[in-house]
Length: 116
Image (cartoon, rainbow, N blue to C red):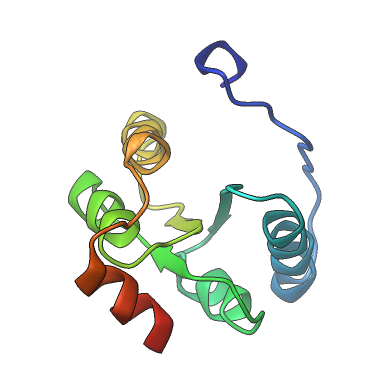
């Protein structure tokens, strides 16, 4: 990811409770302006629910590139949640789309985000 101008701050490979890992990522996303987070669990559902408990986080469970694109463009998602049912190549496609999609900037989308 560094070759595309992104820096991977931490890579943690450890078995932890979903809430604990979600908290580590969400805190780092909130501390650093324009940061994005990526969380992966069995289905992507549990980790997205855990992430949503943190004020200011807009986590989106995405199963394809379309979800990734619109979750960020229309809803200002700042955390991408993925499930392990995806192949590695599909995960990278989804991640690439999420990272390279511009942030929501249309007035109607910004109003929606304010209400979330």
